[in-house]
Image (cartoon, rainbow, N blue to C red):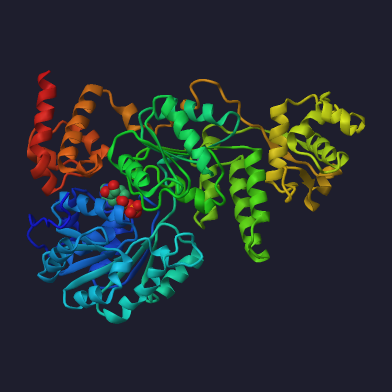
Length: 619
Ligand code: ADP
Ligand code: ZN
C-alpha cells in the first residue's frame, strides 16, 4: 500500500452538521449515547476527556469534529499498526487521512507534510515521539489545525502498565496551541488515572464524558478448570467454530503449547508473545487482523489497541491479576456490538500461583496491599453466586439494577451448599498435618488414601484421616479453592503450594460461623454450555438462514479486501453485510439505507454487492 498517496476524492467539508457527516460519510443513523455531546463540545472549540469502554465508539468522537471543523485534526496514537489500519479505513470512507511515523521513508513523509501545509488533509495520525520533535511542532505551527485528539490517553499515567514517557510531553500542546481544542480518550481509567490524565495533559478545564462501562453484548462465563485444553476445544467447537478469537495464557510455553494444540485440531491458531522475534509477531498480528477466523494465543503482550471489531471470543486459560486486566482483555471481544463470549477456566493452582507471585514480588507493603486487594476482587468475581456483570460494574463504580441475564451465573444459577462441616474438616486437616502440604496430599488424607507418603509421615494416624469420604476429589478441590480464594487459607510464600491457615479462618475452624459454598456446575463432556446461546442474544451466524448468500457476500467482500490490501472489515463490517443479506437492496438508493454504507462506500462497492445479490437470486 502506498501510504503517502492521499485520497482527494472528497471535497473539503466544513461548517457542516455533525449528523449530516455521520450519515453521509460513515453511513450511520444515529450517534451513540454521549457521542453527540462530545462532538458538539469539540466542534465548538472545547476540550474533552472521554472515558468509554472498548468498542464504545471513541473514534467518531474526534473523526466527526475533524470533518466539521476547518483545518487538519492531529490524532496522537501510540500504535503504528493501528494507525495504518485506521487511515486505510478512513480512506475507504473517502476521508483525506494520512499518518506520520517511523515506518515511512523521507519522500513519503515529505509528501504527507506538504499535504498538511496545503490543507489537503482532514486527519493526520502521528506517533507521540514524532509529534514532539521540534521539526514537527514547527510544521504544525504553520499549518491550520482543527483539533488534537490524544488516543489511549492513559499512556500518560506512570502507574499504569502502558506508560509512555513521550506522552508526558504532550502537555506542551496546551501552551503552544492555546486556541486549538484537545480531546483525550481512553478505555481504561479509574478515578485516579483520570485525574492524572487531566493534570499531566493540562486538561484541567476539559469537560469529562464518562460513559457506562457495561458491554451488554459480551457474555461472561467462568468455570472451574478440569481439563483446560479439552474445555477450550469443546467451547470453541460448540460455540465459536470458525470465529476469530483471542486465547490468553500466562506463560510463553503455555502459549506455544496451546497454539499447537489448537492447530493440531485444525484451527488456524497463532502464538504471540515477547519471546517471538519481531517479524513473527508482526506477521501473526497481521494475519489475525486480515484473515477470517484466526485465533491468536497470546500472553498479555498482545492486545493493546487491537481494534478488530469482530473478535467473537476471548478465552482465559489463566487467571488475570486484577479485574482491570480482566475487563480490558475481555473487552477486546465484540467491539462491533454483536454477541461475543468472555470465557475463562480457573482452578486452585491459579489462585495459589498468583498469590505466591504477589507475596514473592519486590514491591513495598503498600504496593502489595493494593495488589492483594485487586487479586481478591478478581477471585471474588470467580466465586460469586450472583450476576457477574453486576459485580464487575460495581467494581468500576457503575451500577446495574437487575441481574443481566447474559452471564453464566444468570443463565445457569449455581447452587450453594452448607459447607460448615466440610470446611471444618478441611481446615483441621491442614492444621493436623502441620501446614506443610499441598492440596492433593490434603485430599488424600481426608479421603483416607493409603499412599506411601501418608504412611511415611504417619498421617494415617491423625484425627482427620479418612473423615472426608463423603465428597469426591473434585468436590474437595472446590472446597479448598474457595477457602484460598476467600482468604481462609494461603499458599506458603516459600513455594511448593503448601497451604497454611490464616487468622481469618479461626471462627470457621471452630465451627462458630456458617459458610455457604458454591457448587461447581457439572460440565457435560460434549456440547459445552451452548444452551447459553439461547438467551436471545444469538450470534450473527446463527441468525443466518441463507448460508449460501452469506458465503457469497463474504467472498465478495474478501475479493475487494484483497484487491485493496485492507482487512475485510474495512470494506464492510459483518453487521453491515448481514443487513445487506437481510434487506436485499435492489438499487443504490436502497443500498444507501443500510447501516454502515456511506457515500464513498456506496459509490465504490454498491454495484459490486448489488451484482452479487442479483447473481444469488439468479441461482
Ligand atoms: P473504540 O475506539 O471506543 O473502542 P471504535 O471507535 O472502534 O470504538 O468503534 C467501535 C465500533 O462501533 C466501530 O466498528 C464503529 O464503526 C462502530 N460505531 C461507532 N459509533 C457508531 C454509531 N454511532 N453507529 C453505528 N456504529 C458505530
Ligand atoms: Zn448476569
